[in-house]
Amino acid sequence: MTESNSINFSISDSPNFSLQEENNFELGIAGFKYSDLYQSTRLSELAEIFYKEVARTNPQLWEAWQPYLASGGQGHNLSAKAESDLIVKMAPYLGSFLEKLFPIKEDLGKIRAQTDREKLVMQLKRNFISRAMKKYTLAQLPEFDLTTLRTQAVVLQEVAFEDSLWEVDAEFGMAQMAVSLVNWEKEYDKHFTNPAKNSLSQATRDSVTSLHSVLEKHSVMQPLLLESILTEKELET
Image: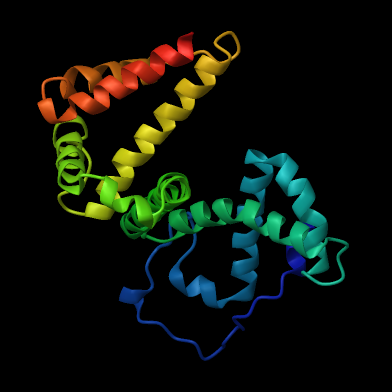
C-alpha cells in the first residue's frame, strides 16, 4: 500500500524534540509510543496499519479511497459531493482507529451518548412536533384541555416509559417516548395498508399490547385508548 506514502504530515520531524519518559506512554497500537507521533516515518507506519485495517474490513471503500489518497486531495476527478461522501464513509474507521490508538474510550462513550441524544431530539422535532404544527393551528389551541393533556403525558411517561430519562432530561425523555410511539404508528400504518407485504414485528406487537394493558388501568387515559381502538378497527375494514 505504497499510496499512503503520498501523505504530507503536518507534524515535522524535530531533532531537538524531547519528552519526559513518564509522559512517553505506550499507544494502543503495539510497538508505538506517544513520541512516535512527532516522527513522520513512524506516522507513515501508523498510516499503513490503518489503511490495511480499512482494506481488510471494507475492501470496496479502500478501492475507492486509493486514487483519492494518491492525489493528496488535489487534482482528483471527484465532485465536491462525492469527495465529501467518501470522507464521511472513511470517518468511522478513522474514529475507531483513534479510539484504539489513545486511551479515550470513556470520553468517546460520553460523546456517543450525547450524539445519540441529539439525534433522538431531532427526530422528535422533525417527526412529531413538525407534524403537530402542520395539523393544528394556534387558533385551535383553546379547544384543547391542556391540563388533561399534561396529565396524560405524565402518566404515559411514568407508567409506560419508566425507563426513559424524562426526570433527568425532560426533552430527551419526551423524545424517547414520542419517537417510540411515532415508530410504532408508522409500522402499524404500513401493516394495515398492505398486511401481506408489511408484516408487523413481534417486538412492536408486544410493545403496543403492553402499552394498552398498562394504560387501561388509568381512567385519564381511557379516551386515548378508545380512540386508538376505533382507529385500528377502521383501518382493518
